[in-house]
Image (cartoon, rainbow, N blue to C red; front, side, top):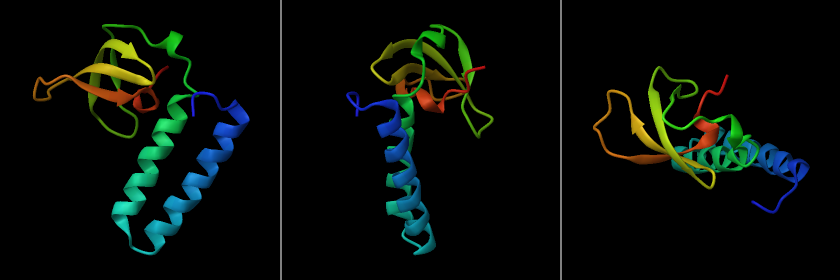
Amino acid sequence: MNEMTEDELNELIKSLYEKARKAEMAGIMNEYEVYVRKVMIAKSYLVDKSKIDLHKIYQLKDTDEYFKVEYLKGIFAWGYRIRGNGEEEGLPVALLKID
């Protein structure tokens, strides 16, 4: 995916959303979740990572959870959830609400 153009990524995202919708309508929730994760990965390639500040706390999209970014590696932000279990984790940067 990292060698795809923005247009190609947008087409892939559109296709994955359609597959997710069909899986959800068929009641195949595990397949639906896989497609949703793939969408987040693809969307992460479209994020301008220069807008993500290290050691800053970001809200996670569509949740009331917050995440402190310690470092970036590829399309993942590594850090800790605020009020989490204290374990480091990596999240696709598309999950961060960047203002």
